[in-house]
Length: 543
Ligand code: HEM
Image (spheres, rainbow, N blue to C red):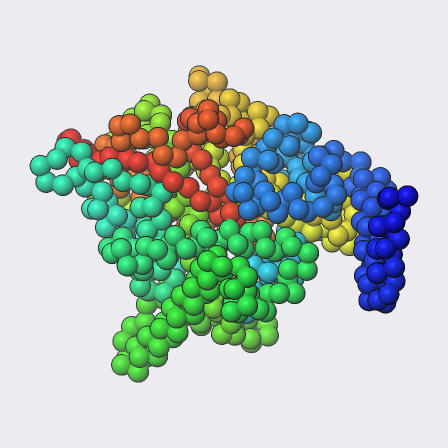
């Protein structure tokens, strides 16, 4: 009696207003729809047979929270450990942890997938797709041809002196002050980021941002990480791409706060750099001066041979921002990881140092060519650092196209998303015995030490820091050149060690599951990777 009276009163109030009645019907309809959709997703859905946590099967929200938390790579690894090589990570998405799946999805020229809808929002604030975010396969092929000139071997050769100039400046700044044996401690995540930004500014627009030389622009490099975080989770929201045209509006800034402001700052930097590059080229032409053939020069000049089309100004802006984002933070992450693992593995540091000092008799000899190529251990240090700390560690999503695709013997119909997370496959025992050890030796064939050609080939097949195939990283050779030159210069000039008492960058038994290994460099996965440390001291090499 007492229960029904308030209920009756509520019904009376609701029925007095037709809008209230409508809202109640709507709410009931939403509840019924959600229940039916959930039931469908766990029973009759084409991906229902694949294992995974129930919450992933019901909605994308767990994924969004993982992206915000920066722990997505850890979840991928733990899910594969628990559920096996195929895991359903969303209502419509599967994650794989095998080299066969990796090579089927990303490898072949004609693989029947395209980039997923997630990419459509990434360059929203630039007002056009970049080569990275263009999901249409034909349009991407045209765009990739456009930018290929900027990454040709000629362009790479021409960029080396500028890379070396920045690397030498970086090394000079690491030196101990007069009278001290060891330098003050340096946070290598920050310093490699300054170097990464200066190199990309120089190569893309012909002017370094001067993060190495002055405090002024260093905040800018930090804001990239904040902007990345936002661009990571936001596109997973249902219908997010519809908001792409207003990504750099005041409204979005009001809703999204600092991260949106940082993203806008990044786009404005791309736009301003592009405009000053165009002005500089015009002025040089008018004065009959030689024009520096940096990356934007190639893009400004590029023309599709079939259509005769050139890139529009918003497309050029999108590419400018992409060059900075894709080219600076990634290499910096890899370099910081090498400083971490070398300072935590003295025998690897000793071997790499000995090799570099044996191969090069003077610092001027350190440049690309047979001598640098002969540094097999240094190359292996880079591969092993990229294995342990892939700068894009999580699932790289691809959508299956009409006709479907067969992955590891299972047919996946069109419209579903598939992918392989680098961090997870890079720590699989199947490809990397003793995966939590930093062992550059695993990349060098040495039958006597038990490293066969087959085991190196298998490790290479599962190795994917740059992804692979037609959507793989176009900057890979450039990245390796900058990375190798930097490590070779530092190892030649300095001894280095983790600053006594410092632990920055390490895991800890007090942290959550997946972050407990003290000797693992910690990543916060926000498309790229946020990181901190190691704190390193440098001493001039004794000769
Ligand atoms: C260690 C350094 C680097 C790593 C680990 C890396 C990794 C990657 C990965 C995994 C992708 C594919 C991402 C996806 O499909 O979502 C990619 C694409 C790309 N990267 Fe890199 N990258 C590095 C350095 C660079 C550099 C120096 C540049 C130069 C600007 C660059 C430019 C690009 C571009 C333009 C794409 C898009 C390619 C396309 O879709 O056709 N990357 N990179």
